[in-house]
Length: 161
Image (cartoon, rainbow, N blue to C red):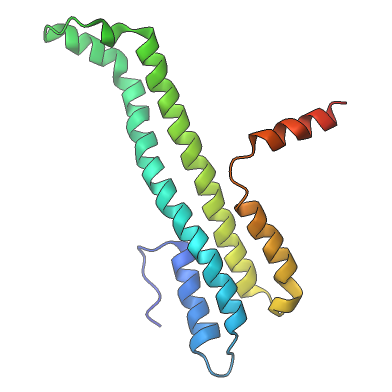
């Protein structure tokens, strides 16, 4: 098989494996299982792209937070006497942006991992898709839920009554 390449995501490897196992194979043709795995792969690939972008943004903004005090000193050495470099408001904004980019990266990284684990479940399950489809659909709904700030507040209010 030519599916084994080191520079690919787990989701990419799993969908190629599923293609060989369920789509191309005549003795084990299972288009329905391949369809659900490919559907999950589309989600995992989207999450991969988003979290890769935000990983680099989080990395760059994190480095900026670390270097900001030094930037103020270097600016003074070069004669750039701007209050911008010393402003607590600007430093706080840069730190907030760093935190936001990390939070978005972390959110979509978790979604990518959930999707890849769901793909593994479908591939390695001995049960037919008929028997596992309800669980798979429920897990896909969780993956698609997005940010759920309101849901967390409602849950805490119910538990804290």
